[in-house]
Amino acid sequence: MLPSSDEIRAALHEHLAWWGLTRFTTDREYFAWQQQQLSRADLNQLLAQADQKRSGDRLDDIAFYDLTAQPAVLPVLYSQRYDYYGTVGLRVMARVGSATRVLDFGCGVGILTTFFARQFPDQEFVGLDRSAVSLAVAQQKARELGLANVCFDCVDGETEPLPGQYDLIVATHALMQAEQDPGIPSESWRTFMRAHDAGRQASFEQRTGLGVRLDRLSTVLDQNGRMIVCEKTRQLARRVPFQRALAERGLRLVEPPELIRYQSVEEVTDDGPLYHMQKGGAVLLDWNETTDLDDSAPFDPSNLLRQSRDPDAPLYENHKPSAQSAWERLNDRRVIQETTRQEPDGRQLHIELGRSEGLVYLYCANTFDQRQLVIVEPTRAAMLDSYYQEITGSMA
Image (cartoon, rainbow, N blue to C red; front, top):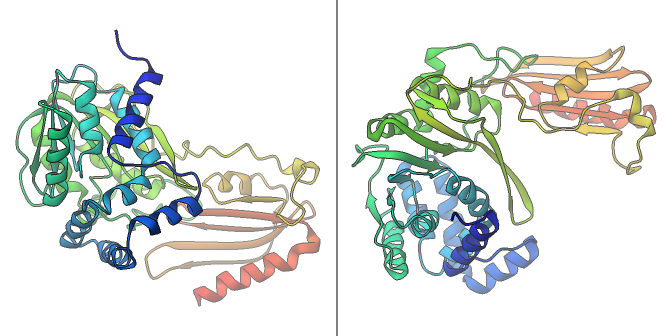
C-alpha cells in the first residue's frame, strides 16, 4: 500500500533533519543561528562568492556551489530552502510513478535525490551536477544512508554530453542560470502578447543556457519519457520563451502547470510553474501564454471607499499583472500626465497619473510584464504626483 501524503511529508521532514537542515519562520531567528554557526570570515566569503555568481560566469557558479557544500556552510545555507525542498520534493515525489531510471539533473549535494531514492528503493536514480565538491558530499551521504539505488556523476550539461538513458528526468532550478535575465518583451506596454520571433527566442536560450541544456537532456530522454521541471519563470517575459523552448523540443504537457509558492524564511517566493511533460505523443494540453497564474482578488472600483482598511495605506495597490485589468476597469479615466518612452535596456515604459470617479490613480506598465496601480483619495493626490515626478525624473 502506498504511504499517505502525511506519511510522505513526515518522511521528508525527517530526511531534511538528517541532513542537518532546520526550518525557521523569522529572519531574526535564522540570522541569529547563522551567526552562531559561521564565522565572520565564512560569511564574508559566502557573500563575495554569491556576488560573483550573479555575473553568470559558469566558473563562478561552480565555485559558489563548491563553497556551499562545505560541512559548516551546507546546513546554514540550505536551511533557507527548507520549504522549497518540502514544496518541490513532495510534488516530484507524487509524479515519479513507475519510472525505472530517473535522472536528477543539477542535483547539487543530493538532498532531494537521496530522498527519492529512499522512497523508491526498487528504482534507479542518477544525480548529475557540475560541482565536484557537491557530488562528493552527495556520494558520502548516500553511503551513510545505505542507498544502493543511487549514483552521482560530475558532468557539466553546458559543455559536455550527458551519459545514460532515462524514462524520467527531473530538473528544478537547473536549466536557466541567468536569474536576472528579464526575458522577451511583449509587443507593447498595453499587452502581454509576444510575437514569435526566432531570433529573440534563440538569443534568450543562449543567454540563459537553456537551449544547450534542453538539447542535451532531449538526447538522453527515452521516447515517450517524461520530464518534471521548475524554474524561476514567474514573470511571463521569462515563462513564455521557456515554454516555447520546451514545446520546440517535442515536450507535451501531461497535466496543467502548477504555480510553486513557498517560504524562504519570512519571504514568500513565487517560482514555477512546475511542468510535468512527456516527450512526443499526442498533444494533450495547450501551452498557455496568458497571465492566468495571477491570483489577485477581483477588482471592484465602486467598492473602494466602502472597504475597511489601514487609513495610512492607499485605497488600492496592486503590483501584479492583474493591475492592468484593474486599470482597464476604472470608469471615466481622465489622464492628468502621462509618459511613454523606450528604455536603454529595450523595454517600453508607460507611466500615467489620472483621475477616475473622484479618485486619483497612478498606473505604471512596461513590456516586461511589470504592472503597478495605486489609487488614493483626492486629499492625497500630492503623494501620487510626487511619485510620478520621481519615476519620470529617474528616466531622464
